[in-house]
Length: 309
Image (cartoon, rainbow, N blue to C red; front, side, top):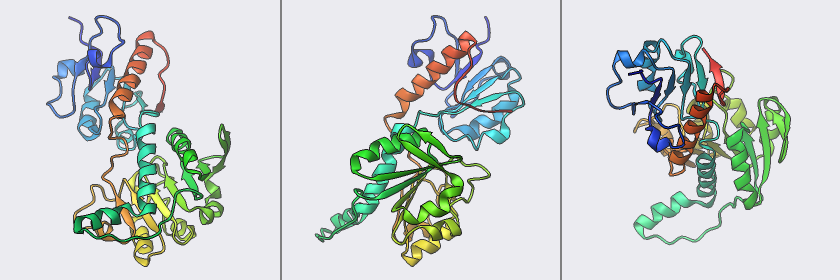
């Protein structure tokens, strides 16, 4: 019997649309990994979602490996371990809907005071007051890729002005995208700043003391990218002064220790890195795997190749 060339987190039946007789070995990242005889023949490795740490030790044990397909948009935890000659494909597009939804939810919750409402409901306290609306706000999206496009599509219904920033300037279907080096002039006009950049050497610590100082008084920082994109110490100083607010789906460190001061800083809302963790995940993950597997079977170039070892 021929050893299957594919190590996947879902069965061919779950993925669907694959040729009859398509063979794969299943591994969920929790059970013990396949035996070495199986790993020897693996050419395409679909990394189980959020199991990169368990997957990394298998990489040097796969001498035939050609492709590593993640189910995450960020691959910063994988790339340092990528074997020579192996292509890494990320999950661009997979998390657009879910992450954009959460970004909007964090904005609305923070601006409209939802956390306070929840706390007062627990004590039966009725307190009327005015809060900021998302309508009429200027939202600066830092890292305008596919998730940024999905976020803008949702923000248009909220009557916002959207300012787009990416690594380099370009024209996009919805308007001009500014270059990253224009941030010093753009930050002071934004009511909400949303971080969507991948974690790289350039983006690590991007939202540091100088970045935060240029944000206008009362502005909201929303991080749905990676925790180390923000300098936590600098952000804490701004939060404790009351000058800025923040809504964070990711933190540095992560998971955030129970005794970390960020939990109790004023004006902060924290969710536990759930941007992609919704019912939108599985159908999109299966579609991505199906598409990539069919391309691979046909000998066609794969999409979302972000690096080669």
